[in-house]
Length: 488
Image (cartoon, rainbow, N blue to C red; front, side, top):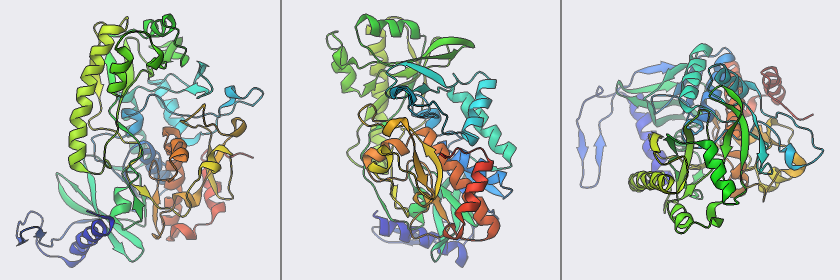
């Protein structure tokens, strides 16, 4: 289904809501050789001020930010818990700080604060985070490592949403959009309770796949320029012996120390480039299954993330291709455990302790917004007259770094979905250039985007205006009051 047909399907679904017809559960309709046409039906309507689609890394923060502005907020999440890629796909949260260690004389500063830092504070209280642990080796990639307990992150995020007054709808997915010209009037959602229409004044798409934006008829492409993965957690392992293994093989790599099992100054991140390892068949076998040896941990005897990558031949919006990829990734997980048991000291009795319920993506649909952040914007550290926060990490370092250990700004217009009056995109949906996207797609940048879009959506809803009518000064003041950092 191409974009035009996808949007037409969505609009027809929305038209059915407005036209009335058969009740939910009625199977009557018409059929041809190629298509079955559903009968129209009446859907119950729920009214909100702001609807956030997706309670992932960006969506959690967006929903909290919106609700704290005093507006009625709903968040829709397909899984049974919030958290998204932060809990399933990465090896740490990148990055709350500028890359000061790679640039002697540059001042260390925390450049992402606000709700993102509140989440870390809450995790620290329950033993679910290493803190912003300083990197001691390979710090030209990142100056800190912030590792989290994935299960406690889900709990903390859920509690913070509820405490903020967000109405949380888990096990629910967006399946259509109701349009009124260039405005989104509502999102059609579906769960085991049936189909419903969620009306609102402002919307945020943080689904990772750009589902709501696509249903709303936004312009998008599907670059398919990143591998997908399914990270595995390994139990019954020894992170200290893991580091010693790399040292013994003269493989200098990443090292960070922080809180682990309640004790400070413990190894919490370690890794190396094993393509140079001299053990026969080991590096080749790891490369064949897309295995990355970088890991983090909050607990003794546990590797939180061991990443298995797989480059799909088509976009991860293709259901049938994803079905094949899901099986392939789980086969790779099994092979990875075999490699650890055979070759890595301290991992002889390793076992799979955690997997994600579905594969994780780095990009699905790329949603066209009013401004497209460029590679030069990022590495030259450019700022804009409508910055909504700043960021200082690049996932292609040390080859690509933000100039002089500085930051670049995320402009407000980069989050406004082109051609639609009241819809924002947050997370990995923005930025067309692969190199720039290797910065903006990272978890802490997504959190910052969430706070910006959630706040903006709430301000627009309260004023009954569209996203482009919102005065930047009002948004900037609201963000600054919520402890969002801006470069002076």
